[in-house]
Image (cartoon, rainbow, N blue to C red; front, side, top):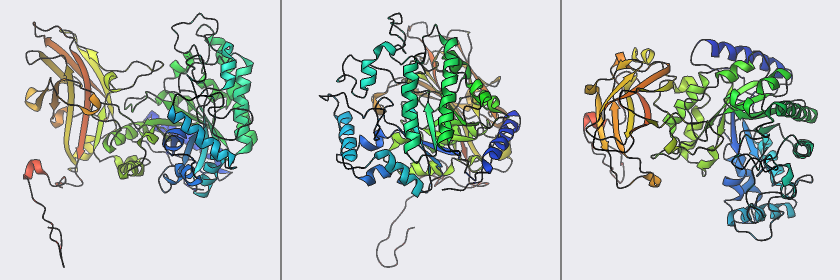
Length: 567
């Protein structure tokens, strides 16, 4: 098992750093007597997409072990391994049900493959969850099973929702919308936790895993497919019910092993969580949670604010982790590259979080060299400080927004003489790195859709006008091709601001004003994208690759044969 000395890292001084230090000392003291490691990097693996969906049956033990092996030697401390769908499971459960138990005919070939792989393994006396637990222990990695606590239902037969359980099919009266008064409510088919039968069934599943498998902790994923746990008219009473149930789960975790801990993933916005029946601050006060993970949108969100969660946990033994999603869903990128990942990670570390929770990174499987390059840097904000970063503001057209998620900052409609403002937070201390000659270039990009060459616009950054002579305008009002058929058309306004107009460390405000609109067009004009790239040099006056923009093209010649070399 890894023995890492935990240290808190914050890029900026102030409240976040002080809160992190205070909370870190408390957490360190509470675990030091056991000698248990305090992890910094958690990695989610849903047990489905890179595993039972991928391999032709029958799977071999090594193919399940790959969930661990593919992360061996990386900074990942904890593998958060999914318990399948949360309604049905892949392990040898006696209190729950195996994936596909109610299904007779399969309309979904991949879900059937998952059933085949799991049933064949269990028939050979090999439990997939036990295999992964034992492999994690052998490779020095902690393993926390993850339960998707409350899934929705769809359809009216097991052949329509093949991942559901008999318990769910036979107990539709336990759902939030069972009374028929919530036709438009997105959580109407979720279980209503006011029912003792619901809480009892969920707790039985958790206890069975804790008592029968060599795990190091347990995660309640409360931000998946919801979070909906109560009728919207009964939220206040629901908070007490949920707090009591969370306390029961925490007690079960501790009873199964003193050094085990309970991780709970919740919406990063504590007020939104509270409005859904999740009284996170009370859980902290009651000592019912060891680690809280704050999660934002279902994509990378550079603007996620973890400070309220960090402050709520200050002075307690509860640690706070930031969910860093690995996907972007833009019209140009599906997954984040290393510059986007650095930007998100550095912003999160700067807020005083105790660690990162890598969400949806398994979607990059099979993992390539670029995946491991990103993992290597993640625990080290100081290493990433003077390296290229790409910040962006989440935008609707490029992000899969679920019904339970908050509205995104973009796009924003522009109307004449009505300024639109957008905030962009960055962790970079540009003056510090400029003093030693390390800053190569700062680019601020804004895309306006629905605009023409006749519209007049004004752009400001932190109250200063961005001059047109520092801007390049790129016409993309029409394109014939686009990645994944996402054609987002418009004009790009790309600024290279001088030093006096560089963005500052922390929050920056971008303002766009439509001064004059082309009178002959009717489509709405919108601010669609706001992006900031910061590019660094390895050292003062160092080159960036072969610098073709400044030095022109060059030719690389490969000479073959004895004594061959590259010129």
